[in-house]
Image (tube, rainbow, N blue to C red; front, side, top):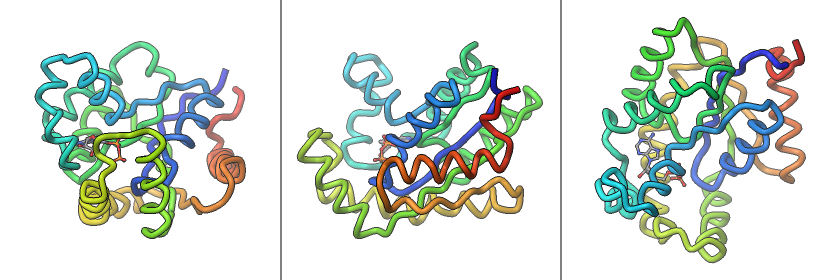
Length: 198
Ligand code: ADP
């Protein structure tokens, strides 16, 4: 058994946070809660939610905060998240930080660590162009990519200054091999006694 770890991974589009998040979550035996994946799955299945958000995702805009927070709240109340979770893509602005704080506090919990993957903008753009060719994601057009990176810089990056005073932010250099980056993250979490056997 490992102690519960409530984690958030943050980084610009193309920082590799999806890949690293999945690796870390698997190692720690906790579920990944990715709002982007939840929205894309709903779009694929043609649910009401999917229909509501298709145009928003294609434009690279943010889904409304209340709707997004409600979805995450539901997901985190499922049993498999009781022993910890890794959030990817949420919270994405300061309003959502407030929502998350409020519903975690209801269960007497709080985030244990925020992994901030740092990658220069040019590197992010290059990686996203490659992903567009490989995966054909409909929001990986040059225009939507630039818009999403702007939203990241203007709305998402500021959430770090809310978490920093809590002493839970680990800044990780996101340039290097996948294994090197995973090792950097695991060592930062280890220093917080997260992911340790209990
Ligand atoms: P990326 O990090 O490459 O933008 P994501 O998979 O995290 O990809 O998100 C894809 C899209 O899903 C976003 O552009 C946005 O439209 C929507 N989305 C994801 N998470 C949120 C969130 N927390 N709040 C609002 N919209 C979100």
